[in-house]
Image (cartoon, rainbow, N blue to C red; front, side):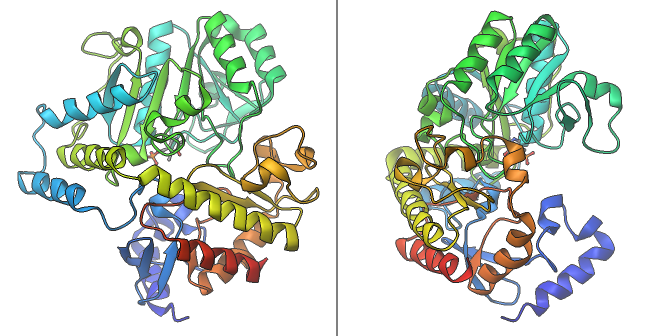
Length: 445
Ligand SMILES: *Cc1c(COP(=O)(O)O)cnc(C)c1O
């Protein structure tokens, strides 16, 4: 496969873009990233004209794939042509907020922003302002964007910033705990309960190989936050409008957070974020409350049109049925291949998310978990499946990055940039894309 143009573009980009990219993970593929020219349904075409089945899908936002259905596309074009933005309110923002509030159980009011990062930054400030407390609890391996309060590593006793440029004092206010460990988070609340403003958690660890919650974990977080007067903040930037359809993961899991952050799909492929929640909490934001929040581009008309039309299209068509059905077919196919050829590996994901984590122990997945690990204690390889971020971190990461992903790329299948990022099925993918992908895994594993 000829990738000369990508190589040359990367060479050029290294002079003017830091590390050749505008977001760190994009530089991960070795020896250089593939530069995309255009999207086409469930495929992308690279700068050299090679075509790939695309499971990156923008790293989450592209529920409908690369070719937007006619009503979505024309709404975007209409709003782009009416002048890009105004800095004063539009009806679209109201309509989009009404749609989200109507479908997502915990959301009464919203504030739209421009990225998932901005949403979690604002949510943390909101929780601190609302409760008058400083500390937040996050999950090891959870991801909430490039923000100071959550770029923290370590554990409750030994923690520090996970990036240069963040004062160590910041990390004192953020307590990382292992996902799915009820005991660890209970101890943290026993020690710091009166100082904790919020627990910030993804319903599924979706940026660390996909890790499902064990039964009762989210209920424990709900009870602890409630009992100690802290807020439960769910980061649904990835799972929102993907897992559990229009009701999001909170409707699937039956847990009601106080605040939810959104991003990705809610902007239909344009830069977006949102914070949603109960009225009494949300009204702590300015201008009704005293937690400052603002943004020149927030509620951008083109983004609002793209997001709203995407979700309306999903509400009126078989979008979730299609992506979830293909997700099942994909995970079941992969589970078969893995059982035959790499029984120590774990197929993870649900609805339209999937990944094979190159775990190092255990026999083949069985029964209910064959279509994606569900943390079933009765599954014979329960102990070998990932239950927290360290289990995913222990996987055969180099094999995935250096051997497996490049081979799939050669076979015309584009996977996300490393072992940890999720992969996504879109409405534009077909059974043929799924079957071709399963065969490529069969060849490569
Ligand atoms: C992508 C992501 C973010 C960050 O969103 P950006 O738009 O990249 O800033 C935050 N939280 C989760 C769970 C994400 O997946």
